[in-house]
Image 1 (cartoon, protein in one colour):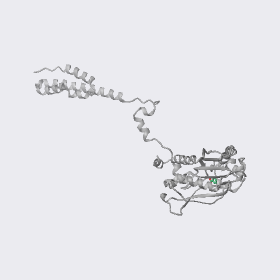
Image 2: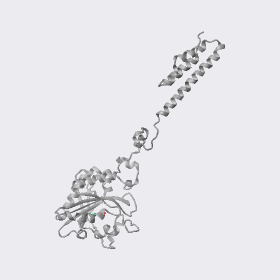
Image 3: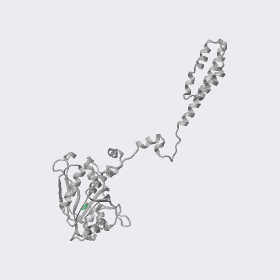
Image 4: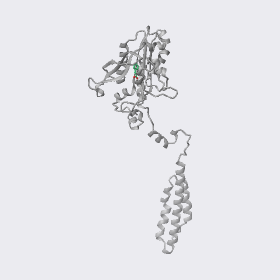
Amino acid sequence: MATYDIDAVREQLLERVARSESPREVLRAPELKELYGAIGSLDPAERGVFGKSVNELKLAIEAAIEAKEESAADAAVVPLDVTAPWDTTGGPIELLRTSQGSQHPLTVELERVVDIFTRMGFQAIESRQIDDDFHMFGSLNFPDDHPARDGYDTFRTEEGFIPPAHTSTMQHRILKDGRDKLEKGESIAAISYGRVFRNEDVDATHEHTFYQVEGVFVSETATLGDMLGTLRSFFEAYYGQQLKIKTQPAYFPFVEPGLEFAIEKPAALGGKPGEWLEMLGCGMIHPNVLEAAGIDAKKYRGFAWGGGVERLVMLKYGIEDLRHFESAKLKFLRKFA
Ligand code: PHE
């Protein structure tokens, strides 16, 4: 009967486990197979002891394999370095990607609006989100205690500051800053855009917080016709198609005459002929407003307009509820991502 040196085989196989890249394969080693095969050929008297030894050998090898596999797994884990940039650790970047944000649709559209006016030669400035009574009313020809103030019901801090109810609060600043230009024979052409606030009961068409864009143009020759041409050009550029426009008289203390400006809802956006949408308020700047900013109203004339941004965007994308914009609902926001 052949003799088997189980200890020698154990040593060999353990060494093979230590060196192997895939140690589990050592369990299929021919040496082990041979030992197992031998069990059956032994005398029953020897079989028990031998079989037990072979089994112990197999268990020892398995234990060595498991130990090796465990330490390999430990080595594969990248230690978490909380100071590392997210993109170096492999796993977390995926997490980051699935929750990555995008620009708010109003930001994107506002940039488009600003871009169109900038290309038309208007300087663009952001409006203020806190202002005072003079810029909100006084400089805009609202007499003290005049009922027209009621149309701009907004909030007021205890110190008397006002979150502006319209971007017209920027008119006085634009006019004052532009005076030098007029003296040099240039015109004032600026837009102001930003958040405005009103004390509204919120519903599908009213929000306490929304965005407006205001335009101011002053020169020696500005006319109402120039204004209508400017506005039509803007709307046609924004909607990418020709549009019908119309106006009707309206009252704003800071313009004379004052108008409401409407466009016909384009068929491409679901409009029927004769379906008019009021887009903004506008008019020739009131002489008192020019004079309050130190501009000679006998020599210079100007026009101004102001209107909501959400309304523009709602028409463009068929959005039915104004409240979506401030809702922070991802389902809505992701449509624009
Ligand atoms: N500020 C006015 C509003 O919000 C709109 C407007 C701006 C009207 C400029 C005329 C001129 O209602």
